[in-house]
Amino acid sequence: MEARRDGVFLGMDDPLAVYLHDHLAGSSFAVELLEKLGSEFSGTSSGRIARELLEEVLIDRSTLEQLIEKVGKATTDLMTRSAGSPNA
Image 1: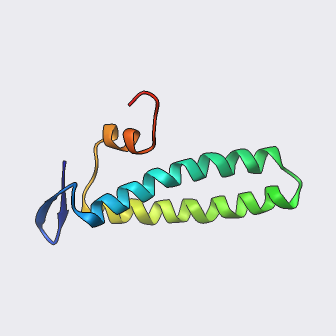
Image 2: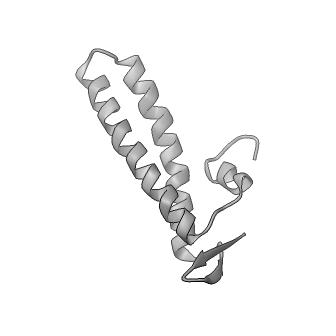
């Protein structure tokens, strides 16, 4: 899939596009982990910290998604593979 920067189409081998998509895929794991920790340790300082970190990661993901809109999108299949899905 191609990405766009300043009206120029770039391949997914563009370092910025690759970085953004990899970072977004990694954040998916962080969201899952922090949700589980926040729930499992509810009512403790660890649970509170996990929920605070989760809020920050979700803000980061929103920013990443906005940047990807400007740089270019990966296919759902690529995002699934990047996240290490067993179905990929």
